[in-house]
Amino acid sequence: MTRALILGGTNDANLLAEAIARAGCEAIYSYGGRTRAPARQPLPVRSGGFGGASGLATYIHQENITHVIDATHPFAAGMSRNAAAACATTGTPLLALERAPWTKQSGDNWIEVPDLNAAVAALPDEPARVFLAIGRQHIAAFGAKPQHAYVLRFVDPPDSAPPFPQADIIVSRGPFMLADELETMRSRHIEWIVARNAGGAGARAKIDAARELGLPVIMIARPQLPDRPRTESITEVLRWLGHRTCLGA
Ligand code: 3Y8
Ligand code: NAP
Image: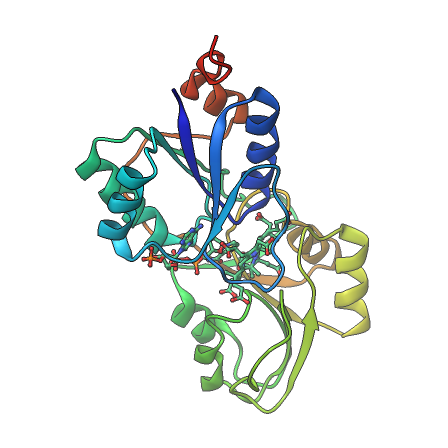
């Protein structure tokens, strides 16, 4: 009998949960517990860390998990690495539901950088108005350039002041629409955008808005993830789960 664990926390994971619930497969949706009011799911939900790869391996045994789907965000590298390790030690089938990275299109003005520190270095020295659309966990590095006026976007209200004097915080979860991104950038006179290459549709509107406004985007490349089977297709995940068996057929 199939019993899947979905490592979630993304738009794609939410769509997968709907499809799995419709197919009648037994599954548990897992959040890392990062946000105060995560999206509701049509499946049983658990929240919070497992306690490293070994904790996840224990969870797999205790919960009789037969399949693990890594549908986390491409920058959730720690979770993905732990999932690969735990599935290897327990011999549990693992499949990543992973969206393709965004690719530069004509009209895009991207400065592609390998990591966060390179993104800070790529900002100009003269003061500018910068849209930091990278959440709140990794903004400390921008304290190295306090001369800029930053516009930040968080899922939940901040619990501490950002490490630079000029910070205007938008509290909003995705997915984001082009018209709203254009309005945000125009009304706040944004000159630079910093983004992670999340891929997918839920946060690409800022990239399209930057192209329309001719604004430079400092695009942070994805971290290296372990080699594991991957797909972009929810149908493929259902086939991989053998969803006929989920219905006990
Ligand atoms: C808790 C689940 C949906 C899902 C929405 C997608 C789209 C918006 C792209 C911008 C970029 C950012 C951030 C982002 C994206 C979707 C999707 C996606 C980027 C939720 C969610 C959880 C999180 C965690 C949160 C991080 C933060 C990152 C905001 C739910 C809404 C900036 C990543 O406050 C915190 O501690 C938040 C932390 C990890 C990155 C960071 O370092 O701050 N996501 N995002 C998941 C969990 O607990 O397991 O609350 O319902 C999911 C979504 N995030 O409803 O359609 O691609 O799927 N999320 C980045 O790309 O840089 C937003 O603002 O333009
Ligand atoms: P991370 O750095 O890769 O993981 C750090 C630790 O958080 C993991 O080792 C694990 O703790 C726990 N964790 C992460 N995701 C989990 C999940 N889905 N279920 C259970 N535990 C989880 O994670 P992150 O980048 O902070 O992302 C956390 C969550 O937010 C993920 O669900 C991810 O899909 C979502 N998200 C992240 C981003 C992003 O930019 N990173 C963007 C959108 C959504 P233990 O080691 O204790 O097991």
